[in-house]
Amino acid sequence: MALQKVLNVSGTAVPVMGDEIDTDRIIPARFMKCVTFDGLGEFAFADAIKEAENAGRVFPFKSEKFAGASVLVSGANFGCGSSREHAPQALYRAGIRAIIAGSFAEIFFGNSTTLGIPCVSLPREKLNELADLINQQPEMVVEIDLEEKCVKAGDWVTPFTIAETAYQALVEGKFDPIAELSESNIDGVAASLPYVSGY
Image (cartoon, rainbow, N blue to C red):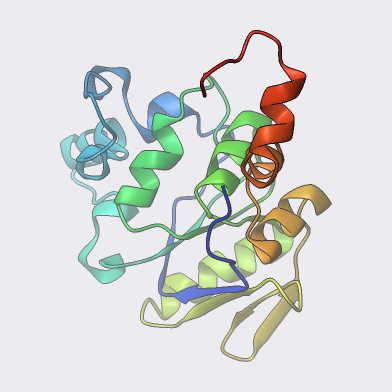
């Protein structure tokens, strides 16, 4: 199941800072009654948005100055909690095409990679610098250059880290090695499985 290679993602960014932002925060469970993932984007961070409104604030993900952002910036252990695939699906459908954070929960990271969303990590001080830049210049383009393994924002450039397996999957466009093997050698795979017939 080869997908399009992801070598570079660029766009305006939205900072949703904080550590341990879990999947229920990203997409509350009550919105997961859908048959498909379509429409989940409008409910991304729904509770956080409502809480901010009740406190007289505007949650960044809902702020007009960050409208149309395709890069999300956050803190450590982003996407922790349950293993629900709905979380990266909701972000993808909300227009997010890359995530920069301190670190990621393993299952969220894998699900995002499968969608072609690069999840790259920066040290805390670099995340804070980037978030400050975005808040000061919300129209600034942030670029995740996978070929050079760095994040660029105007004159600001810093290297990122990413798991090598995920990096290779993104730049080579091969997101499911088992499916790749099966699709390239379906006869051989089927012949090796005695319970498969008439595939």
